[in-house]
Length: 522
Image (cartoon, rainbow, N blue to C red; front, side, top):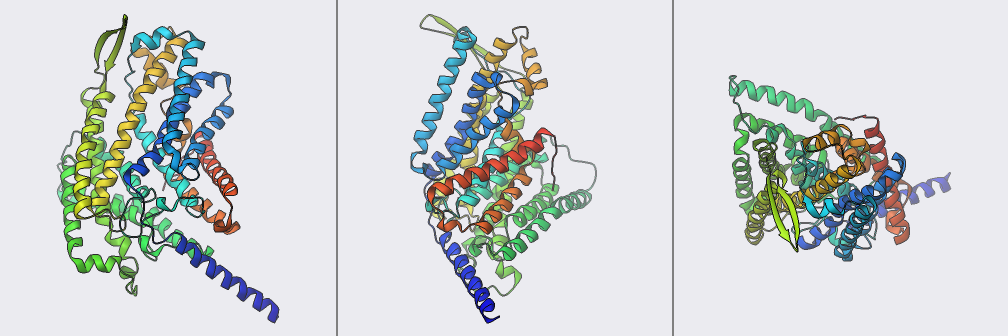
């Protein structure tokens, strides 16, 4: 009896020390730099091109199961490797993926005898969809899911771990980009022409508040459920991230409610100004040294507010960021709405070849967002100089950094979209010579499942279709992996194998759900 008691006591002591070791492993990090983060994200964007060109080359020879398997490999492997053992060589990986994509295009032209199409016609098809938004949301989700488990292994570079107070890191971008991704598809972002209803502001506020509270109830339940799960399994808890009881789900729920309240009073067309105003007030509150010192201190946590001060007091920053996302979304949707199918056809002669191309809405939007990125980057330099970047405070530096990164990613993804649209046009011409002009896009939209080249990988469509469920599944599987193995003691090769299998299962589950059109909403 005494022996059993001693064994149990020894196990509890071992679990306690291992949890302390885990917490120390993910704490007190200073991060990296913006260039490093952009470079490690880039292979995930390049994978979209590689998937599209690979499918264009060999997709028609594969059944649907092999196509999905190929997509999974091309999405998962670069993501996992560039977040771990190849993190120092991300630019080389991206270059290799681009070269492979170019090789695929050349082989496609040779196989389908479509050199004339590629040389003479560079007109991207005008799409009624916005694939780059789906790709942005999915890339954000996939990287986040990869990181939440990878951080528990020693193979994950410590410069990518969440910063303790100030600095840039890959994991710090997760929550911010998630807010931005949600804001882009918010009804306020899509409703370009704003109509003020005849009902009073009070009635609008009450209706929107009821809807947002009802819609956020599931998130609050998830927040509490995650807290209980962490306590039950003894998983490491980085207290300085959100606090003791608070977590990402609680933040997302409160941000939705607060945005709904503010949007009931202020028109969506002033989203950018609203975001700036909220962020200015937040930064002004943080400028009082006592508040900032209290948030960042190791002071007592003797009530709910003080126990979760990091999570609760960062919410205004995320509200501001959400409004910035709505403003960007309005730029996107207004660009396509004002010029629904307009394009400018141009023709130039190069080395004796007459090359025709068109400037369409996507190209115009890319120019707009590129200018926006430059402006945001200038603002980031100023904010970093005066306030620094702190995810823990969600201060102006952090919000402007996420806005800059998010808009830059969107610009890259629009370029990818334009390239794939040209490729789709060429492929459709090769496969279906009978369809011409606008009929081509109609055929694509109605029969996307049979197209070998797609603007959005089917795996990314699946992630976007069940985005929040994908994130929750990743959290559950992260807990499961930590229950059955001590991640700190796993060697590099085993860690890579576990991460690839983990990502494969997560993505396969949502892909199966997408195939059967099963959407799990919260």
